[in-house]
Image (cartoon, rainbow, N blue to C red; front, side, top):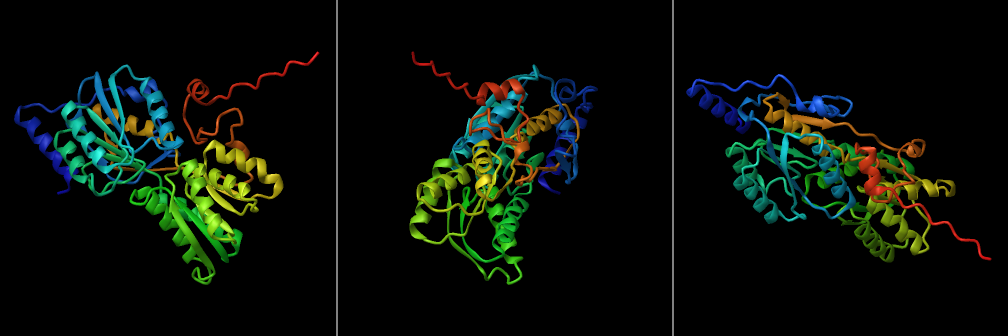
Length: 381
């Protein structure tokens, strides 16, 4: 019997032993107070098994914890803003605890242990590592805390549900586009996120799938160099600068993050090198840079990793605490942006840090990302 089923069975037997079994509430605070993203199959497709959650049924107010893997880039920051925006809709949430592991495994393990001690009613988690944090996640489950995993995977079934886009297809989509642009011939450089995090590793595997699918099996493609740049602008630019200094002929850039690609664009231009086809992600800085250079022949595409997934994860947790069934695994549905659709996503009135595939309210997005209007110059006398 897997861990999830065992925990449920143990909870059910305990309830039967005292002669009562909790019954889920008639209403659903998610549908009462928000837009139901979790049950919208254009957003999240259930592809796992149905999970009974009556053992987690509890009366509000609730305390919910969220452990973010890092706040090292604008995407992870917007993840927090999305879920914080969603949480304001529910007076049933008495306390929402948000911490960040800053990419450190030991820190995340300690934070999970702290959430157990604090007795949170549910835990949202972006894993730093698929393996190293497994014992801590299993400890949380054993303590009766429902764990909702999203954005990166963990190699245990001690969670109640997980929400993931398909990172391998993300990487493959960009890889196929780049192989088509280069006709499967040329020298490329690679900008990864963080090796060891499942999202980064699987995206990179998707690139390899695309290279291997070339008619010659990828023999015409040379990967000159690749570096981790943590999906961040400054690290992406510095990594690209190093590669530009080392290699006089670069024909394409496969990047798995928009801010990194924006950094690559700036590095190429600062070095006086012509822009080459680049892949990216849907952050506003990259989309703006891409849109501005289309008239000059710059070619790019963007995959997406939605910042709204944190609010969908919160909706899952709220349903679990109401004893409402959820699915063990939801695959998030995301768009791919090409030259003919980039205008639909770019937001020139917002800062570079905004991520276009967002469900932030207009008020929240404006407060966070709206640029100050340029001051009008006073005519000289």
